Length: 479
Image: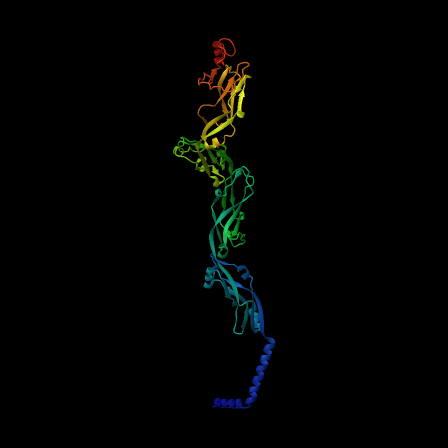
């Protein structure tokens, strides 16, 4: 009963002066709020933090993050709002990160593209803390795939070998011919060759060198050096540079057998070149001897009625280890000059007679001599100055008319005189006698020396020089 009275009294009291009670409550809340803002106000705070890279181990050896070092120092500004006490409590734990283990990153690496990743906040955010902003809200990842390619090696010569030696670039031996180059696909894909320098200045013998990474220059397709610490070269290369001795070999004309058909002949054999420049090992060059070309086949000669050519590949004649310096001069051309045989007459005037030892009582009766000469066309055409010579000093000819053989000169030994040899007609007059104008031809009775003679009809029986004819004949025979 008493409890009931108390509840009734409470209701009556609460219902009394209600407006004033509400106003009092509001006043109390306002006072509380004022006190709270003075002692623990609401703040907006900008906090700079360093970006965290989580799960870096997800980037295995097959993925290249080109700007990873820049990302490790990337500054992120986080803006939060809350009470002073809450914000201060959050400050030390506040952070920002990106997760490198997502599948998007792996896929982007396969494609070699730039990927934008949202920055995530890190920290103990309560209900009273508001995240206003993160700047920048995302970062770019420059991703690429790591690959390895075998790149060919080129050797660049520095200097010149000794003047009596040479180097053939095709004979340079590189072991191995390629080296593995590993790095980002975007860089390795542009690499075309690896350059190695070899100093050959003044060399007279072969050289060998081992080249390591520091001796090798990486070059792209335009010949520019690729400078990237992300690119590595595996292994070393051994370079062998052979140095050869220079020399020369004389080429000798080929021989031939047989003769061309009747009316033709071989005038000459020409060949070019007559010496060739070669190179090879020192001992092989020192042992070089002239090369005689193989004989010309007889059937080619016996059927030839005109000039023909034969090519010889001189490389088949070189000793082992010896090679041509100039490959374009490997053929020796042999020209066989075949000409027709011609016959031509030459008229030799008396002015071209050379008569030695002509006695004072002897008269030359021949004014000119016609010679018929046969031979190859070039040889016969080359005859321009024929002279005829005879020596009478020791003949002791009797009086009368005589035919004396003449020796021709100015005719090549490869040409022949057709018909009898040329003869010079002379008349030996007796003392005080003038040679008659019309002198009959002597009979063809040459003596053992080849002279035709007939004594003059008024010649004394004892001979032109006195004494018996027998003694004169003996003297003549002796002469």
